[in-house]
Image (cartoon, rainbow, N blue to C red; front, side, top):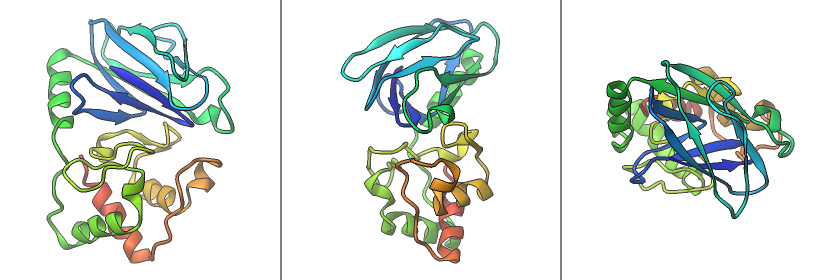
Length: 210
């Protein structure tokens, strides 16, 4: 698994390139998993205390770390190197599941996003495309292919938003889109200038991306 640190979130790319996640790393239990870690900006440090020691994550250099979880569970980790204003809100969750369950998750994540199938989410899809979101975000199966921010193809399957800063619920997602600086000051996520109806439609669309 390739791990890329950003100010202030984590990107994980699985072998083959079809599965890309943000701030959650899924691994099979009882197996050693190699992480190849580098940084897109400044020095960070990857640390999931229950599973492995910490390791620096550097620009222009790849460090390798082995993770192994012998029991299923969700293991919280943290950037352990001061990396700027929101260093304290750069968490990661390692999600360990039995191999069969992990394989199902991997297969689901490799699929492109499902097309919206009702008027509200169809409108939300159009809002997403027209509001500038594709400049930073990818949703596989659509024309959105930005790479500055997290891949959103399966956003709704994640537990949290903004690197484990807030729960992934419709209310929190809506607030994050409308005013990300109120949640995580300094984030590169730009506020979306949307009407109340457009914001509701966009939120509904993104919450369908499982």
